[in-house]
Length: 389
Image (cartoon, rainbow, N blue to C red; front, side):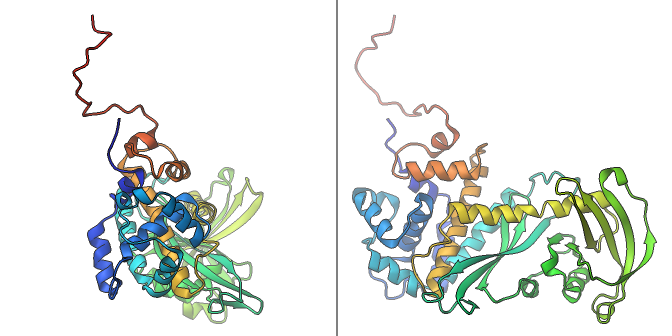
């Protein structure tokens, strides 16, 4: 019989606690705190994400029902709805943002050799944003429209492993393209974006940083063709051109040459036009790079369906950002577990299993890999073996 740690505790063991404590000290999170520490807050909120809790009362009832196991979960303070609400309200959300960024750094190292399905060694990012609707009466700070509040989750997703490398949380009114001003361009990397990010001045900043971009063109983009290159029409590539911009202001915003590729997507029965500053990759590879952008859409869909970021436990900006960043850190932690334990199952399956076994005492690798467990230290007994010859 296995009498070791709880599944939840084994999961938390994969967190760099020295880094977490450093984040707490940086923002004085435990200043004047007597019993319910930032670590207690994080563990309770992570538990809520893993087990699909719907409210602070739900968290309180579930954890108090297992009060004899709280110490073994690493929760030292008294769990109550009011205490957790106060922690989410008052303690700086940047503690959990910085900690999540550290986990992201760890996860990206683990997934850096993942296959993209393309003959490409460069890092590939997909940039997009997703809106989370809120009630204007309760979330007045999250200005969006006259009758609606919202926050936007701006994400730069590393497509090797679907790990978010950059996240910015804003109110709903911030235009998607303005987030490009916050990015630090990585030389040699590809940035794949939809039409919302077609801003030639900002794209030229990426170009000058020796980064590559693939962006979908708008129908009213004015240009002049300089050259046409041979294409593989059987593969869906209609044209591959070298162009310069001829609009009123665009030649000043982007004075260099661009590559324009027109592609017929047979699956969607749609013709797409891409602009890029990369002139070396085959046109079909550029089209496939843009198709891989859908991974960021799947990322948003996954975290909205399987993590608690659509209904919030608090109404202040600090409480909302705290909950979102802890949810992101849980997502990244599951990705780290999957890689470290060499699991073949999906992140969804891992999350479902953990939600049902958080209080169990059995090896986490046995639970997640569905293999028969054999104790490495069997109990010694003086009883005779009845099946021994």
